[in-house]
Image 1 (spheres, rainbow, N blue to C red):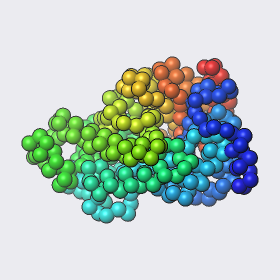
Image 2: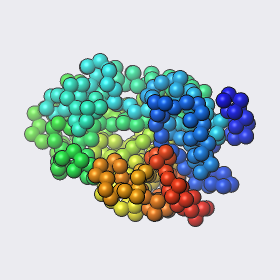
Image 3: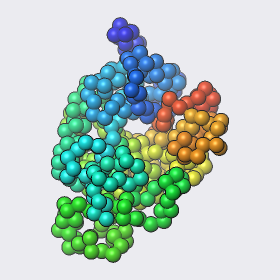
Image 4: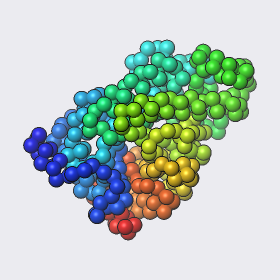
Length: 367
């Protein structure tokens, strides 16, 4: 395997997403590593995706697992792929109980979670959490072959779920409900009162308090920028998976004012089915996203792929939906015409032969 990687590396040359003679549109893929993954299986996936024109991978190799990211990053470089170490930030099941966010009812996410049990979300304003994340992302950035650290779940819990998920969870979310409204821990409450003079726990409807919204946007932004400073100091870059917008959705749903973040690339998750929108919506939301950063940073439009597309109409769970082959061309062309720097597939492992055929056709038509 080592000899194989070495020979592929020599053939691949410099790792870049600047485009090649064959593919001028940068295309990335988000992919998580399976429990049974081996060097051989990762090599097979990465080489296949490279052949289809991907220039980089955002790869989740088990959180902050240095050894697994080092292995995957080496294989990525051997195949000429840029490597983004994809790691969720705020979700952690085994942290100190004092690290977790507290909802408006006074319930810690350590004990009571919104929506699903794995939503054990930490408080982004907690100094111990901040130090932990800065340190851990820094360790990943120290891996020689890692080009970017890729932030995910760098946000609050969804105070309002995307419209397409309401039925799944049996909810109607036309306002902010206390069970999913974070964070009301003692530190957040005290810091907000010190800054504004307002005791947010006494406000009848905190969702109407613009200063409280601003406080939380800024908490997330400060955390991101501290991580970015640490990673940049090591000569590496930072990218992030973010909610669409940010004005239309990201700020309202998860307190992400991501156009203020000091990072190097944005990957908005433009998953149209989650918002009960057609494929044409992808281009529309991408236009907002590109405008929000004034062309200063690249925006890669994230596309959700439906694996079992022939049975999509029968699938009740919207997280099993996504773009079918006949829609992928419209999503790609809409994104690029709106000013995106490229696109990202969630996930390339879900791309069927029919998807790849339409994908290749769409890329060729835009060259």
